[in-house]
Image 1: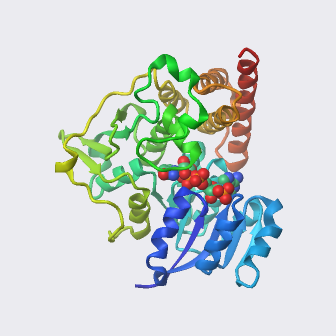
Image 2: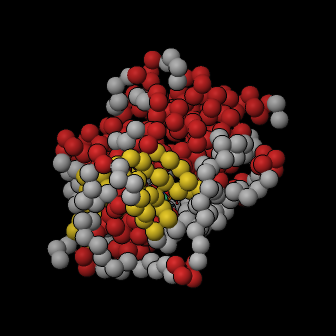
Image 3: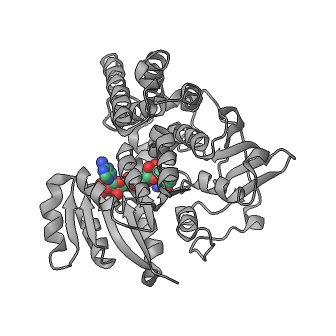
Length: 394
Ligand code: NDP
C-alpha cells in the first residue's frame, strides 16, 4: 500500500481524535502533513509529535509561543491564526479531514479542495453555509467531498451503484437527544449541563446541545439537500431512540435500504478514509438478536421547532443557510452563557429568519466567501439583537 499524505483540521476535537485513533492504528500507511487545533496546545503538540506532522497550526494566535515551546526539538513547524490554517490547507495532501467546528471550517476546506484533495467532511456548517460553493470548487479543481456525518455517510453507502433518479426519499434518523422523554413544559428550564449529555453518541458540547434541540438534525436536513441535490420534500426525519439505523434510502420500486451500525463515528470516518475500499474498523458489531427491537416515531414539531426552520431555509435558498447557521450559533452561545433558556434558541432563530428571509437582498447575492461572511454577520447580529430583547424580559 502506498503511503498517503493526510491532514486533520480540528485534530484536537472529538472527530479529530477519532480520526487520529484510526490513523494511529496503521501509522506506516500515512504521512501526516498538517494537524490543527483551536486552543488546545497540549493535545495538538502531543499529536503533532506522535505523528511527526510537517506543521501544527493553532487557530488562536495568542497561543503561538506556547505551541512553539511545546514543539521545541520535535522538528514540527508551529504556526497560528487563520492565514496559517489556509497555508496548511494549501499543502499537498491526498486526504484532508474537515473537523473544525463552526463556520471557521469552510475556508480551509475550500483551500484543500482547490489542491484537488479528497475532503472528508465532518464540518456540516460548510455545506449549510456554502454548499454550492464547496461542491462547485471540488468540481472545478478535481477535488472530492466525502460525507462523514453518520447519516450522510449512511446514505452515501446505501447509494453505491444506484441511480439518484430512482430515489424517492431520503430518511435520516434522530435519537431525539437529551430531552426526548421530558415533559414539554419542563423544556424551558433545561440547563446547559442537562442539554450537554447525549443518550447514545459521545460528541463535542455544541453538537450535543444541537441534538437536544434538533438544530443538529435541521442542519443535517439542509446538508442532505445540498450534498445529494435532492428536493426538500423528499427528505424525512425519523426519531429512532437506539441510534442504530443511521439513514434509509427509499427507491421508486418501494425498496427501503437501511444502514445500521453502532453509534461510533469511527465507522463513518473510516469509510471516508478507506473509500472506495472497505477496511476492517475497530467498531462494535451489532447483535440484532440481542438488541431485539428498533423503535421509530415521527418528530414532534412542538418539541423540536428547529426542524421546520430547515425547510424554510431550503425553500429560500441562496445565502439563507449562512444566515441560519450563524443565527443558530449565536443563539447557542447565548444559551451556553446562560443569557437565554433552552427553548429560546429556536424562537431567536425563527425571528431572524422571519425578518431576513423574505426580502433581504443579501440572501440573493452570489455565493462566495465574502458574501457568505456578510450573510453570517447579518444572521449573527440579528440573533444577538433578538437574544438581548428576550434576555431583558426574563
Ligand atoms: P469539537 O468541539 O470536539 O472539536 C472542534 C475542533 O475545532 C477542535 O479541534 C477545536 O479546537 C477546533 N476549533 C474550534 N474553534 C475553532 C476555530 N475558530 N478555528 C479553528 N479551529 C477551531 O467538535 P466535534 O469534533 O464534535 O465536531 C467537529 C465538526 O464535526 C462539527 O462541525 C460537528 O458538527 C461535526 N460532527 C461531529 C460529530 C461528532 O460525533 N462529534 C458527528 C458528525 C459531525 P480546540 O479543541 O483545540 O479548541
